[in-house]
Image 1: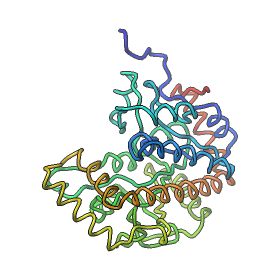
Image 2 (image 1 turned 30 degrees about the vertical axis):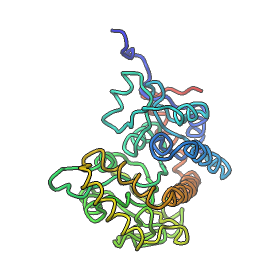
Image 3 (image 1 turned 90 degrees about the vertical axis):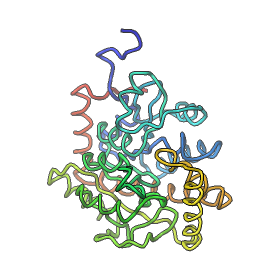
Image 4 (image 1 turned 90 degrees about the horizontal axis):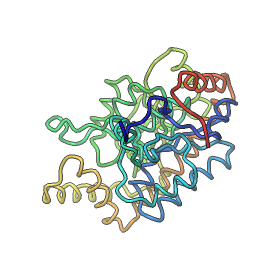
Amino acid sequence: MTGLLPPAAPAVQVSEEVARALADGRPVVALESTIFTHGLPRPRNLAVALEAERQLRAAGVVPATIGVHAGVPTVGLSTGQITELSAADGLDKVSLRDLPVVAALGRHGGTTVAATAFLAHRAGIRVFSTGGLGGVHFGASESFDESADLTALAATPVTVVSAGVKSILDIRATLERFETYNIPVIGYRTRRYPGFYVTDSGHEINFSVESPEQAAGVIEARDRLGLPQAVLIANPVDPAKQLPPEELDGILARAWAEAERQGVTGNAATPFLLDFIQRDTGGRSLDVNVEVYRGNVRLGGEIATALAGGASGASGAAAAGAAASAGAVETGA
């Protein structure tokens, strides 16, 4: 049938650079694409995406920006592909359930945490840096509105470095769901769970690590035990660069009141609230967002480097090789 992928088409395209690094046991960090397809305005979106790649390369780490280009889930988008996706209108926001649909229809898409984590693991990448995670929305007891990130991370053994979940979410309920799904949440040099725009969301977590090497040790222990879930490393933004917490509380109250006044609910709520925060802060929230991302990219690179320094390099290469030999991935430029 025309318009459908032929049976022999690769499920996932892995760039030659990423494939070589994985085969050699060198550090690789996955990066999601929704930050530049949906999260940041132009032209800042492209600048931030390319800066993250340069930042990792300067540290001796191979970046693997992940997205869907012309229906092909791609691990290691080229600079040209990133530039194209960052400038395109009407791109799909691709979560895990959307991957086969977007692939079959040959569409472009930015991958969410759920889809990026899945594709990274499929390619053999062990560390993924992002900004903020999805989670439980307020009112979920009635709406059942929970991010697919939760269930995807419960079944995907990657390591995700983030600055917590987005501030507009029900953080207490999200932490409870992480516990239910057996997803370990570990603070980086803190026992206070960060709140994306702020260093401390007001919630305590049970464990912390003090170095990339300690984080790598937790990851190795998870893998030796054969556990299927992600490890979440909660990396707070620099306190000097956060939004003042008392200011954020007021902004969130106004944002929710305006959403209720306009009848904004469901999938429309998150972009509405984030846009409100951006406008209400005069763009300062975007500056914090970028600082959050830089810090998580840096820490992800350090953890990937620590993992590559041990037996993990070989195990990561073995995972990539097993996936390729099973026909799950295809390497190429």
